[in-house]
Image (cartoon, rainbow, N blue to C red):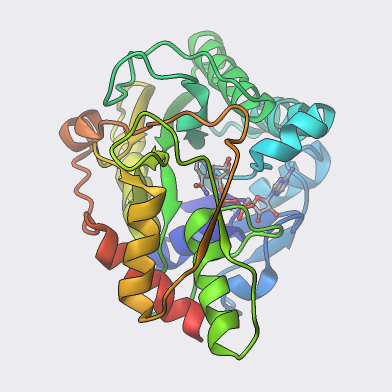
Amino acid sequence: MTIAVLGGAGYIGSHTVKYLRAAGIPLAVYDNFSTGFRESLPDSPELPVVSGDIGDAERLAHFLRQHQITAVLHLAALSVVAESFDNPRRYYHNNFVATQTLLDTLLTCDIRQLVFSSTCAIYGKPRQLPLTEEHPCQPDSPYGCSKLAVEHLLADYARAYGLRYVSLRYFNASGADPDGELGERHQPETHLIPLLLERVRQQQNGLNPPPFTIFGDDYPTPDGTCIRDYVHVWDLAQAHQLALDYVHAGGASNIFNLGQGQGYSVREVIQMAEAVTGEPIPVAIAPRRSGDTPVLYGSGAKAAELLGWRPAYTDLHSILTSAWRWHRQ
Ligand SMILES: NC(=O)c1ccc[n+]([C@@H]2O[C@H](COP(=O)([O-])OP(=O)(O)OC[C@H]3O[C@@H](n4cnc5c(N)ncnc54)[C@H](O)[C@@H]3O)[C@@H](O)[C@H]2O)c1
């Protein structure tokens, strides 16, 4: 019983690999290294790491058969929202078209268990908060649309071909592994916490980085800046193990939010970064970015009830402390 981790060299994938290996689950990683890093994975004879694209049916089928894969975690995707507006073709192709090839290849190899990395970006503008799984999905970016399209694909393949899946709609993944060995690393980096900590690091190294840009401080929120729901990457990893258990146990295909049910504003995150690093972070206010929703947070109640998900990092301080431990190194 070996589990394939597609996109296992990425930020969430590499943490999930570490978490599941610690739980004794046999894994094999498949990644095209377009945004992931080989060095985020251990060099171990017990962890096969294969370079390949999920859209390459022949190579993928060979990988799945060679390693006798019984279930798949599918994290492989491009996920920079702004880039998806500039290059929707690339996003639909990589996230949707290649996923259809992946699903067809799974069926060919008689694999019918899958956990998919979905996103809160599929909801669009919230009509009520916290967002629950029943909230209508009207994504406002090609990235979000490509992920929603995959959810439709999964539902139809489940009905017609007996695929069983769990779709995990992550809110903002954040933090770093408790040992400080792995952390958040995207190229280019677009996420608030690593951008802030990188700025602090530059400052501490005697560089003189420009003030940190806040896009909009006139939103209808208590301090005027956008509010997001930060979920620790180790808690996301925990959810993957629970989702695998659920699918193995014969659970019906299902969708779960992975959110904390509360959010923090950009200013609150900056203040916590100052507290954790001991460095002041000068800011500059820029106009709002188009498409930014003022407030976004989601309920993880369904995941708690049906999967038994219990996030361990429920406050911003512990998230930033773990992230800073890795960044400092
Ligand atoms: N980071 C977040 O806050 C967040 C939030 C919601 C959803 N997600 C989703 O979670 C997943 C992982 O996100 P991440 O932040 O770790 O991103 P990441 O870019 O660090 O990881 C993605 C990994 O997938 C690989 N990959 C991409 N396309 C591939 C393909 N066609 N074939 C094989 N490998 C491919 C990349 O090389 C990389 O290793 C993505 O599906 C993303 O959409 C992330």
